[in-house]
Length: 162
Image 1 (cartoon, one colour):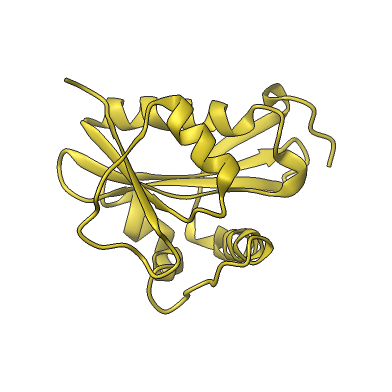
Image 2 (tube, rainbow, N blue to C red):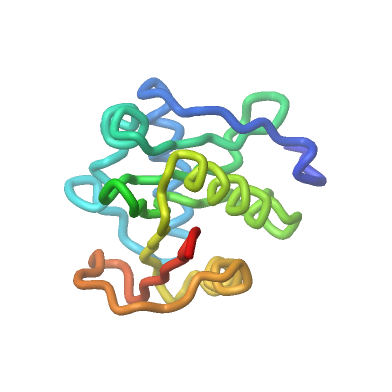
């Protein structure tokens, strides 16, 4: 894996055939930060990526290098006509620190706006300090979510339109 910049990546829509690779990446990053995977509940959306994201009007993208190695994932899960949830934005360690997170977040927010969403929400855990710094620098602000997933202790919101 030889990634030096965002110019070295390919972003494509995930299909259900990518499930094993996606689950392996997501669960390994969660474990790296001491967070529990939850395949029966919070992570059950990965069992049918196409049905839970794409066919519902959201997106789920894979970030790969030129050799097809999976570097990261990101999803927009429709909550309502106007609101989507940023989910499963994770990157392998070797793909961090080169600006890829900001590039993917900016691209994903633009896609959300093109789809017609007015607001992006997300839930995260305080141990994901780099991700939280990225979200707040991008313009996400804390908010009180009516519910949080078991492994999450923070929620953020970004208004795409005023």
